[in-house]
Amino acid sequence: MSAGLEAYARQVSGGIDFESAEIFAKVLTTNDDAGRHGVLIPSESYSFFPELPIPDVTANATILFRGFDAVAHQYKDFGWKYYQRYPERRITRLSAQLNDVAHGRRLAVFLRVVSRAGAVTYLADAIVEGVDERFGALADLLFGSDVPAVAGAFVRLPVDASTFSIDAALEDLLQRYDAISSRWIDSMRTGDTGIGYTFESLVGVVENNDQGADFRGIELKCKLKHDNRPTTGKVNLFQLAPNWATAQRGIERLRLLGQQDENGRHSCYSQVTTTANNLGLWLQAQLPPEGIRLHKDAERIGEWARERLAARLAEKHSRAVFVTAQSRRPTSGTQYKYIELVYCERPDIQKFIDMVDLRRIVFEFTMTERPPGRVRNHGYPWRLVDPRELDRLFALQVKLRG
Image (cartoon, rainbow, N blue to C red; front, side):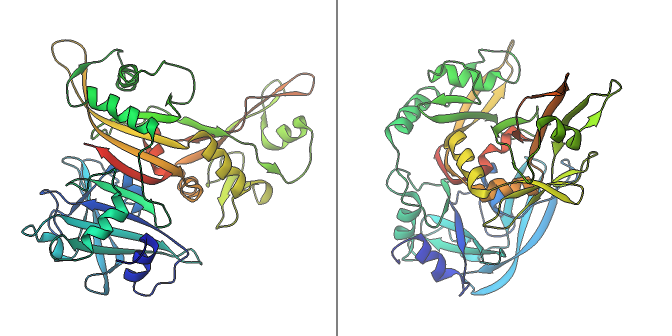
């Protein structure tokens, strides 16, 4: 095995000259195979693969996407499937080597490489312990010494990432998680917030009004396993105003952006996405090194530099833990069992911009006129449409428990 993950990526990429690359790798379980059932993909890493349209959550869905099979050294179509029964998503049409269960652990590795022109190419590799001499060295590069490469373990990380290790804060959280996991616990609060409030209370977090609980600098997010309920509402990621194209007084800008009410006062309470809204406001995601532009009809009226967005994202969301739980309702109340923990770090500005492009992250104006000619502005929030997708913003994901 060559010196690092980037060397590995270039070795198996079939001569593709890429600008950046990331890896998703999973040690397969007995429930994974190369073809009929496929490799189960954790929800945290859905965004690694192409968008999978699911027009009806009660019906199966499949797309094919072109990729390079590093075992067969040829391009082929991989299957990306949604199974409504469970629900879950799987990758199929992989190398048959992944069906070799006789020799040892099976490692499925996927690469997502991006060219200098922004073109995305997928690659798939299959490494079986006891058959492929690369297994040990690659597993060490991917998981390091702190994450056992056991069945079900997965990691997602950029190829330039250093070997993952657990620091004191994360070790403390893991010890507290281990003390409460895998047993049924009565919810300490009624309603949907009980799952997070109960976990936070048990690991020693004092409830506050910040965005998400904070455990020694680590955000805590809890979710139910196989939760397909409609989202409960948008969540603020951070606030950041655009760099305006022209200098204007606040009231002049409000009159440009907003609309009048029956009293002649202007306001602008408006969600802005990459599709023009009723006020003609829309966002345009740019390729690197540019950021995001703000338009009013055909006119560019402002922009956010990529570096400013990246700095603000890193400031507000540097590292997070996502805990999955099961729930049940005994004779009274609700109980939770916390069964999985995934650690994330390295918020990625390109993932943020991609989610803006897909309208999963939106920008909002919250401005109104106050006589005489004053403006009340509640800020410039960037908001995540579905709070359960916060994990999609992180470049590094490691399953540490479950």
